[in-house]
Image (tube, rainbow, N blue to C red; front, side, top):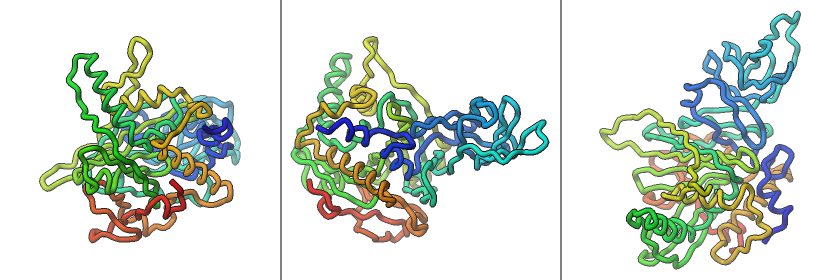
Length: 400
């Protein structure tokens, strides 16, 4: 069990909290370009701040504070202009730097400014950075940055803290029980065939690498040469799980912290194009969590079952009452990793996984995964992409 203070340090996202300051050192997915095609002005909740994302008539994207500096109306009602976002109330206009560039009726435009943050588009997603200067590079991970990939995304708002989603990703044995036994129980109760084999886990382990952690499992019927044990699933610090399907593609699950009790979940799916494949438009879907008549989240498939577990722990899990055991060593590792990176930021250091070297980021960063040969640190493939290094948790300073 941990203390109330430790749990707050782990879960809080506000600008003056230790966890919020650490999270602000990273880029976060907040929306898609398709969303701005539907409505060029959108309210955004990110890291406990209310913001407004917009695209002006010149095509530039901006992310600014929610309130007009004049009379405080929300800029979510703003009107895109050639030179920025025009307030609906009295016409004050803000550029991408949050600077007022027009004040109708006034004899001069006063040098006023509201909060504004860098935004970039990559892989169809819009990313925002709320931290201090200098701004790190937006990491060009393969699924976002490669041209020869078809992509889609499912976006869903969850009424729970982001760490609950990530704890789940560091917990291999839940697959056997939540997705296996519970999933089959759900199907039986709803007259559906059982959909999942549930071999027991034999062992689990975790390896550190420069961008996060590899989660590995070995279940009955698998040999130690299986990809699930030899390499496993990467978790990108702070908030992304990579689930891949061998050489064909896979998915990134991004858990963007909206505030302490809400998470924006991106299920970002990608497929490598093969000879003869056509480039497809980026497909975007927004959905809501489904509940049954008793108010329980419906766990009728793998992702909804995960949502059920995250939401079922409450808006912010009270970890002062949890009892972690040997199978939770990945959860313990993840908590320690987040606390260590909070400490780094408090010392004025970069947290884990920031990209400062432009050469590391081009043409893209390849994360080794199932179906791809395991790569050593600082190797470069024949195609030129950067391969993330792998090492044991002990080699990265962790005692398991």
